[in-house]
Length: 314
Image 1: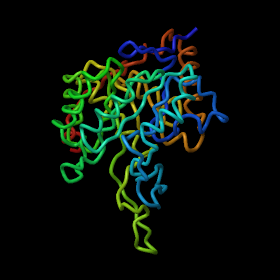
Image 2: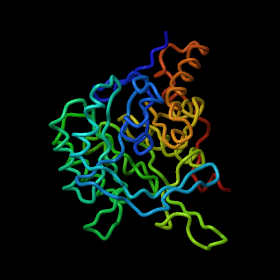
Image 3: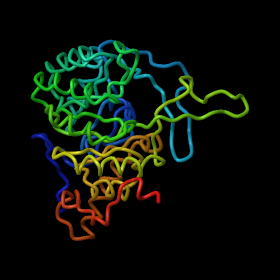
């Protein structure tokens, strides 16, 4: 038997494969298509204090090997989630991680505080790629001190797992990783989407209403892999790798560079059972390789000679 489970800050996941926020709804939408309990965990669609309609359409566009989205954090709000979605999730044996989005630090705290009174939640993923309305819409996640402040404010409010989801749209993601670790984060999700855009050359209009949006899918996988590697070298807390994973080989790459677990995102739109196929694929790979524990893959890349980014261009 291959051991597939992983424990992060006292929370045991039956395997290292989770589904990413915004790509699996709240779980109940796909329950007739997928054995949800075969997943290591579900990260819910983002929740804010009040319901949000999100951005006007079009807000999704296909790109080469990827997808642009600008959903605008559309969601049903935390109180409707508790009354309409959480009862279903509480019946599952897979772990539930609630993704929290907000437009102020006080709102992050308020949403978490409301959820703290509910059962069946293993932890929280904090989406810092949100516009800070008090600072003109600048995203929290691109300022290290703001990311640190969110983590510092949330940590005393819960004993549950806190995972901070980092944006790649910064110069050195490792600085943000270290800041979150210092303020008490239990783990990091690396990475959120990259900023991208696409234009219809016939209408001369952007393909999504907000002009730019978040790029995801296989096109970003090499970038995500490098960011996970950078963070894993910089902190001791677990890294959950995200970005363009569509099969078990992709997932193994993330484990080898230091991810303790991975999330499957865009691939769920192609096949909502992708995460389950990946979990089985990794287990079979380990069995074939004589590896008793999937954890034995984590951080086991054989390092070559590492050079700076500038040197690698010369």
